[in-house]
Length: 150
Image 1: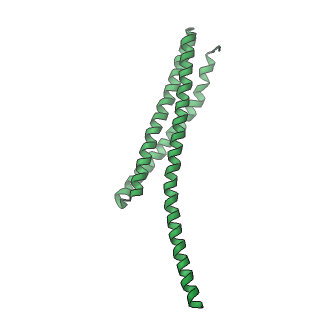
Image 2 (image 1 turned 120 degrees about the horizontal axis):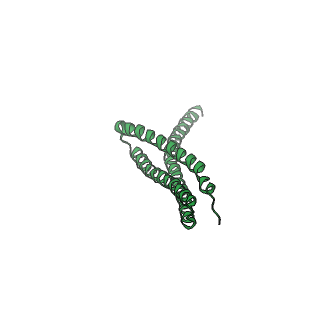
Image 3 (image 1 turned 90 degrees about the vertical axis):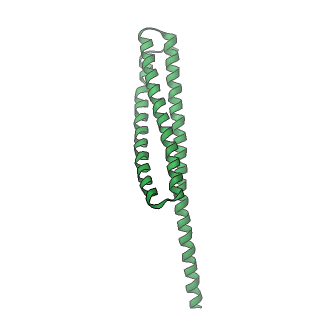
């Protein structure tokens, strides 16, 4: 396969957008961690601790996602350097490494999305429990009123 200097340059827009998305995720999670910590200081609920643990894991994944994305861009630049000086074999290796690092970054992103869904499941299970409790209370009230009528 013949590499031109433009080939590794194609990775820059994609990785730049991914890194921007990763940074936005990180900022949102950091804000959520701060608000949950404040809530923990007031309420001391186990579910808050579980959420904080989950968010810590997500922050670690995002750090790895960002790191592999930056290394992807770095190896793409190295590839361009090798192409400029006509070290074609080294350029192929560097380009392959940059593609692998991009795959790693995307895989870690998929893992982080999975943890995000787990976090949402915790919140939804709390809401479902509340809804079930309220529904049971409403049914008891309806039965009580139905017994008074008859």
